Amino acid sequence: MIEKMELNKETVVQAVITKINKNYRKTIRTKHLKNFDEPEKVNDQEGLHNYVPDISVEYKGSLILFEIELNNKFIIHKWKSISEYVA
Image 1 (cartoon, helix red, strand yellow):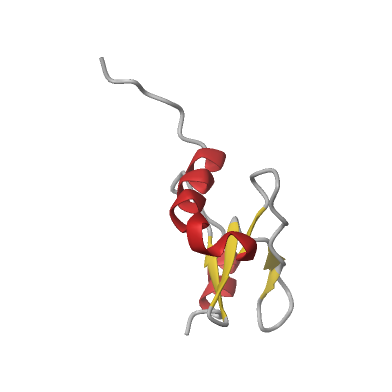
Image 2 (image 1 turned 90 degrees about the vertical axis):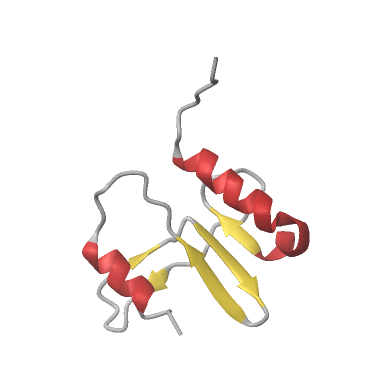
């Protein structure tokens, strides 16, 4: 019998952090797990919208953002804000 578990944001965040945890533990921030600092807000260029990413990682002078969506719905201005941080 195949064991099934509910997929929720905390489970996905933990899986992502487990992959990057070895080398970058001190630079990982998430609002979904205990013992981590909360990521800083990300703002759009106009300053009209901001949000807190699910995970942020500082790596070699870059800020890497993770936003985990478990359904097909998403907020347009959130993705526009993220796109402004893409190099």
